[in-house]
Length: 296
Length: 227
Ligand SMILES: Nc1ncnc2c1ncn2[C@@H]1O[C@H](COP(=O)(O)OP(=O)(O)O)[C@@H](O)[C@H]1O
Ligand SMILES: [Mg+2]
Image (cartoon, rainbow over all chains, first blue to last red; front, side, top):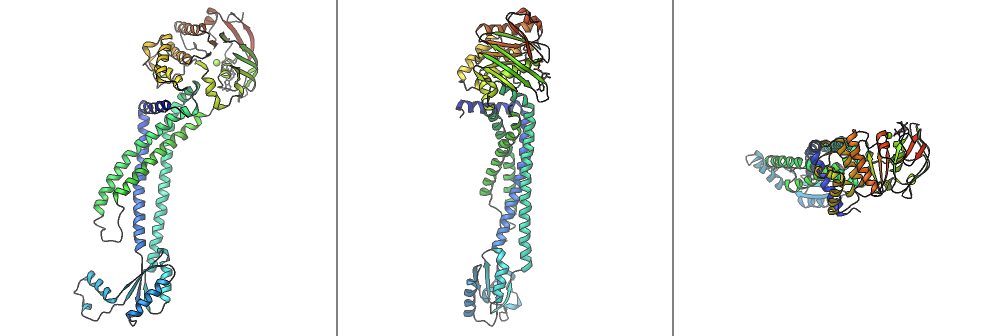
């Protein structure tokens, strides 16, 4: 264990070193800033796509048109039957009067059908336990007596889920690639500063410094550089997200989906970026210093 | 106390730098190690602070066999020695004061003690007024005196110097030699590799002459040529 005074010295040395190597420090902070900015934008994008996708997923339901000949009491019994089918999460009954009211709400009263006898069906709205099971559930319902038509946008929905999956995969690959790029960039920048200091490390060891004693100030330095590098991206991403959120939210207000609420989301994103900066900084300097510490 | 028994050193490239070295140096001695370039002087010195490991033989420093020392223990060996080099090896981004203080920070001494001791040692080498300067602002002789101050700040029993006057002009050479003499007068063992004839002949001490990795002469109060 190192004494407290030694930790204080290491902290002091890490700051002095950042200042005396200020151009290299600036370059490292710049590298962290650029990569974390990209990572921040991507994470914000991906998480929102995820959110929207899951909003959509939750909204996927099967619409079952019940035979017009079937009485309402029988229709309700059918609803109970559907509810007992495997993979069915939720069944909602909507009478043809309810359906008509919906149409009127959407299109206005001046529709000719208002005057005629109600031509609509009684309807069941069914949700599967998982969105991917929707097709299965629809098929089972179709096989039941008394259903005239089962609607769920067959191929369209399947394609939509496929697209969401692809987007997620691409996004994840992008983030992983960005993080790797960040580690590479930072370890290279720090390696540059350390190559310049190889001589220093050799001298430190000559006067009896242990590997740990040499290593700690460099790691602290990497940590600070990563931390400083995270500040600008956090501010930029937060400001950008809040202004976009304010502009876009009213536009999509009536849709099925919404964007991630800023306060909570940005807090978490900031913590993620800070942690990434610190880990990247420490990891980068640890990687770049390793080979100079080998003793014969 | 330093003792070498049948020490051989073969470098990976194949050159046989030491070929069966035997020597014994008592506490408080001042020993010149002389010989032509490539004779093995630096290799001999490097054996002592474990910069290089012997291929065969024993190297005892204060009763510890350095050849068997694990890498983890090397720093602790070095804390018992003061080492001085031809190229000074000062930390370029640290001031004179910080360079000397570093050797004490490494062994976790208190701030107050460090301040007092570093000031004292800088006075001893005549650099008290230049504590805040950086190495590149000093002359070669001054830089070497800083290196010596760093080597002795922890009051080691042994100071090892590899051509400490190699880069210095005659005047500054004598400044540095006077400091080494003073350290030796206080009871510190000084082992100095050199090929400076004037120094060896001018300040008489034991002279160990190495040629082709072997000791060819060893005389108390001898001259550069080994007589
Ligand atoms: N790191 C090394 N790798 C390979 N050969 C070396 C190395 N260091 C020294 N030598 C060789 O070992 C021999 C002795 O070198 P050295 O001890 O430096 O002599 P001196 O200090 O007396 O000039 C020389 O032939 C030199 O070329
Ligand atoms: Mg040499």
